[in-house]
Image 1 (cartoon, rainbow, N blue to C red):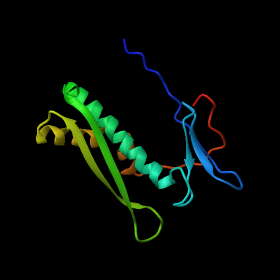
Image 2 (cartoon, rainbow, N blue to C red):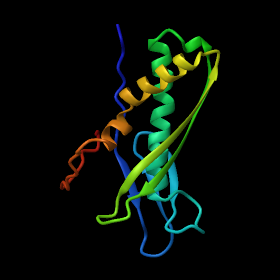
Image 3 (cartoon, rainbow, N blue to C red):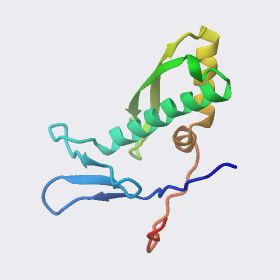
Image 4 (tube, rainbow, N blue to C red):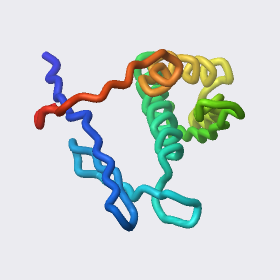
Length: 144
């Protein structure tokens, strides 16, 4: 029997009246400083979005390798993500460029199959390519 562990998917961003803000995941308490400008430490919101896509894609390659029975040959995977902002309004990202470096004993066909499957199953990428709804609500339950 599979034991499914549910993890909170709530993330909080906090910005004091003066000073630097941060983003914290409720599930783990992991936190990153929120950079407002190029000279501040931490990550900008756009870097966080790029990081979410890159992180989801590397995990998705591992999942794909397992599903294809190739996981023992996967030494490592790295994904670099760079975004390009749209030149017109509203302010948004027009394109994400992804570079995969998959280390292991794979043919080019197998590498491409892993990449294609990673894109197919990546929740972040699928969300970025969809027409998602953003809602304002009064509260998010503590156990969410």
